[in-house]
Image (tube, rainbow, N blue to C red; front, side, top):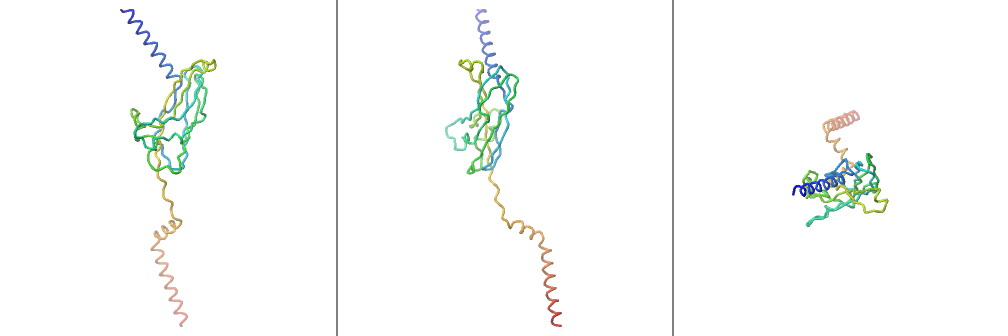
Length: 206
C-alpha cells in the first residue's frame, strides 16, 4: 500500500514539474494592457518583451476575442490590433522585443472597448476581459525534426478607453477672449478717440 502511494506521489510530482517547465518556458514583461486611453483615429504603440527560460523555442503572436453571450460590438477590437514581428524564435536567456500597435478607428464612439469594465485590468477580473493578444511557442528542435510540438503561452488582455475629441475652437475665439480681457482699456481708448474728435471739430469752428 505504501509502495503504491509512493509511486502515485512520484507520478504526481513528475506531472507538476513537467507542467511548471512548460508554463515557464517563455515569460513576458507585461501581462496586462487595459484601460489605454486614446482619441478616435489615434494610433497607440506599446512595447512587449519576451524572455526565453528554456532551450530554443519557436512561436507566434495572435489576437483573440473571447465571445460571451450579450456582448456588444465594443468587446471585439481584434481588428484594431497588431503585434510585430508576429513570429519568433527565442533561445534560453534571450530577450526579444515586440511592438503592440492599436489603431483606433475614426468612427469609434467614446467609451470602453475590449472589456466590459475598467476593472478588467485588475487581477481576478478575468470574466470582464474580452480582447486579448496571445503568444504561444514550443520546442524548436522538435519542430525542426517534424515532431508534434506542445505549444504553451500566455493570454494578455487589451482594452482601450476612447475619449471624445475636444470641440474645435472658432478662429475668432482668441480675438473674443482678448477683447473680453481688455474691455476697460478698449472702452477708455474709445472715450479718448471721441474726445479727440470733439476737440478737433471745435478747433475747426474757431
